[in-house]
Image 1 (cartoon, rainbow, N blue to C red):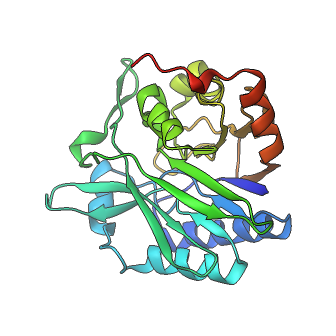
Image 2: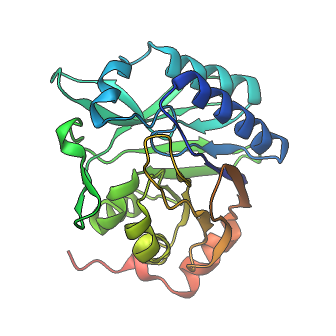
Length: 271
């Protein structure tokens, strides 16, 4: 099955970001992708953390969800909407939510980011908890590929990547493919992005598809990019360093079975 990680450099205007995403998704579909995944905050990277509050949608309603449903149907794609802000009980916060759409345009899964990023190196400071309410449950979904193969797909978002217990819960649920839509900073991305993606693939003997924000944004933030596909042996199959683009690669059930058969690490359970 061909899959695509969409890399963007999103700005504060939703309409502009959706137009950019549509063009990139059309490229992914033209290259034969059955699944395409957008990056974290694909619909808006605001000038302030609180800008996302005004963009919050409720499940089943709103322009971003309409875009995702329509695009999945029009392009005949399984489409994962990176993240978008979803309303929650706390009016001063939103959920940072990843929604999954089938090629019929139906929303088939929702994951709310569990681990909220905090970082302060003296030059850059981030605290997602100021405007985001954390989720509390791992989520997987089942994807029926065109060849009839059923894939179990585990969802995560960005900072979740640092918490291997989340990914092991996906592996125990049978995940074959792990998705990591992200907006990594340059300091953390340069140091840890590829290292962690390859580690999660090797530990859980699964493919990892990681679309990212990658460039200099209108709000002055710089993101690391390097969207990539990693195979279950930890090999990087495709990558794009910076700027908008599409990383397309193939996930192979035979390769997955080969890795798991020659090194049956998932058969061991200590805890």
